[in-house]
Image (cartoon, rainbow, N blue to C red; front, side, top):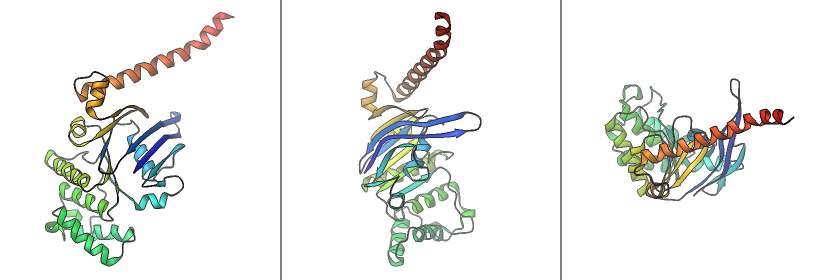
Amino acid sequence: MIHVRELTKSFSDLKRGHVTALHGVSFDVKPGEIFGLLGPNGAGKTTCLRILSTVLRPTGGDAEIAGYSVRSHPEQVRARIGFMSGNTGIYDRMTAWELVEYYGRLYGMPEAQLQQRLEEVFRTLQMFEIRDVLAGKMSTGMKQKVSIARTIIHDPPVMIFDEPTSGLDVLVARALLKAIAALKGQGKCIIFSTHIMREVEKLCDRIAIVHKGHLLGLGTVQELQDRYEQPDMEELFFELISQHDESSSSSSDSLVDQPFRAEQAR
């Protein structure tokens, strides 16, 4: 369902100069699977997800979503994904029903199909009690439900969640994770980005550990723990990041030493 091949993204920064946010990242995600992108802030997770959702164009490599390339067929990709981040960004003067209905129309859903789907989504997410509540008067948990509803209203086969529990209290975060698990049960192909270990262990079938744009490990939690001989997820995470940083530091020192050694040899 999702095929990512050698995905690379570089850009120019006024302070840092040329920056590579992703270095040839590759992975696959199957239908009915929750695939976790785990990494610290600034690891490149959001850059990767923005490319997959066609917000950014890759510098190198490509990705296919439901058979369509993010490079050559971005409109078809957008029609087949649902994207949700930790920022609800909903309109205060619209009700829950109006907001979700509005997004359904943006996706070009026929009116009869949209109304039927609205009933189904509101029933599934238990949202009828907030159907006519203005977004400006909603709690954080209510807004998150609306965000999920507008993400799935067009019934996309692929779902992308970028740090969706960021800033949520424990109860709201738990309810959100439960809703995502239910989507897996419907056969959805799901990418779940987070930096929270317990979410990965509880929710994800397989994970990719990302740091400074590099993919450091790929597999199930148990496979990675066995492969790197680490007793738990937290130790595995810090071990892979430490190894990468030490390797990068050694390479940088070697490059710095080269001009000095060349000068000595003269």
